Image (tube, rainbow, N blue to C red):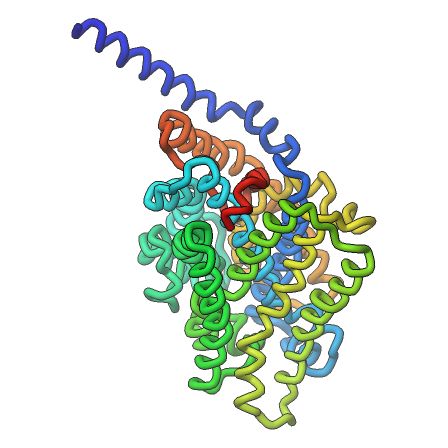
Length: 479
């Protein structure tokens, strides 16, 4: 008997060792990176993420470049205050909400598929699996910024900018791993976009319980999501009204771009989950409609799709441009106006994004499919998570190493942002192949494939993994 047990142990150890080693196969990971998505109906989500991260990256280039000593600091603020088109294009903090909508969609589809198959869900395991998929790459980047980056270059502003970021990572990396950094020491966070990862994890933890309620007790679920939706509007309204904030986060160099985490509006309003939940809720509801309408084989007419796009997306973006008025210094501050705008502007834009995803999933988006759901977006989307973590480090390092004041204009910003995007994806590729993909494969093998009762294919990583297949239509009757 001992010999048999030893043989069994050695066999299991050999299997685990083989799987772990194969997880680091670059060839396999390249194939995984470039293979088609599981569900073409969700390819539009890939396009939304890739286009949004490119625009966000451009915005962060503005942030890092204008947080330095420029010859023409007035350039940026003058464009925001006096040029409507510039403000409409550049004042785009709502682009992060595209990711929250997509996360809500994928969370619902993943959890719903598990409930369809298992009729139950292991909440702790689902959360743990998501944590394990996100953390390895996250931890590596915090280590690079905290302990390696300070020694990789120099310059007059290097220690002031990079040194500050390094100290924040050394002191607060553990808060990031617990995904509470947007609430605890929010003015001293490690990595610029870590607040987004914290929000997304918090939404997932709460979301899987809410989705289960919707699946198990539909009427209670409808009421619950109704309450959550109202709260997602009421809370930012109240916070803005109570603290007399602006309806939008103003992108002034003197008060925000030099160090966002030192800005009160950024820390108390912008990065808090209770102020950002609306788009995620919109995403969950959108996924529910995807499943329900697909089960009924419902198709939108071309006229409805076009009118809906103009109304929801066009109207939602038009609502964003209203923020231009808050930059007018000769315009009196209206507390109620700012509070209403703060409560609704993320919701209205998110509904526009959700409409595109819903119509593409159920009916197709016609000629726009080439723009929004091109196959090239699939591998680029799988690199998005690594790109999210890397690009701000690249921009921080470049901006902190300059040795003289620069004159800034749009062509130069665009040129620099294109370089940022190329380098970020170039560095994201080995990070994905050698860290993110292998760790995800190992986690899947150890906790999913080897456990017949495990949660199958939960909602995927924030930005990298492909969405689950459409849930079986037979379960819609349960909803």
